[in-house]
Length: 367
Image (spheres, rainbow, N blue to C red):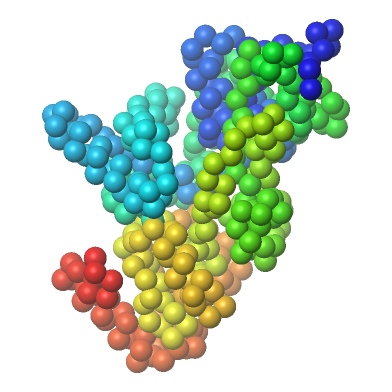
């Protein structure tokens, strides 16, 4: 749709659609690099998108004074892990940029005031120890608070309850503006550049079923796991861009994360995944895709997750305990009774796992 020159649109240098970490980062960066008028449009009443609800870890390759040859080898190793996780479908050029620029992004967030925990760790599905996090229980919240504070300091304007619904183009085909419903009123905005940072489409059942027919309405998402609200990730930016002829790639690459099994931690080494009979069925440190594929093969697609009192729990612990998704036990026998499995089998499983830990080799899954 051609944008009318006589329109009473508000004018900006940059407009960002979406207020998650990607959107707020784009807005702050634009302001830091000379854009005087920057606008963020957020369709919900609050900032943060999926980020504010997320675990919030960040994969970083730290240079740490290494010589160039050592650093180059580290880049190649991490790229290999990324490409392996993506089963070769990743764009090597983009993966390289992601790896090589990760420390810059880490330092940039630090410069905005984000404080990280001192040590890296191996996140679930991360395959190596390269993740940093500001907090084990509220990392996503910390990102948004830090970025929002920086956005305010740099004069970025944010409109909540502002759902973008149409992009305007010039007769030459250049994007010139955007329309949004702001608190129920249609408004028009022009900008030299418009950034779509609206996230994915996990909350759009029809769209996700189109690309993966397995993911019907029986599946909830990490943003609305208990069906108590709504997931804002409905593919809005994808729809806007597609109307203008944008190409879509890798739409079938939808991450399926085991959630209902009682997982309380977000790092490798603290959880054991068990079948309904109390036996391990997968390497807990493998990729999400591999773990999910194994869970698909279990009866009712369900597994048990066992952790102990020594592990550092994530933000979901209290909610899962209150909702009785997770239960505590003082002994293996009590746990077996709660799981309705054989105490003998459960004890054998745990003893075998602990022996593998002591020996440093997982003889069941070759790691």
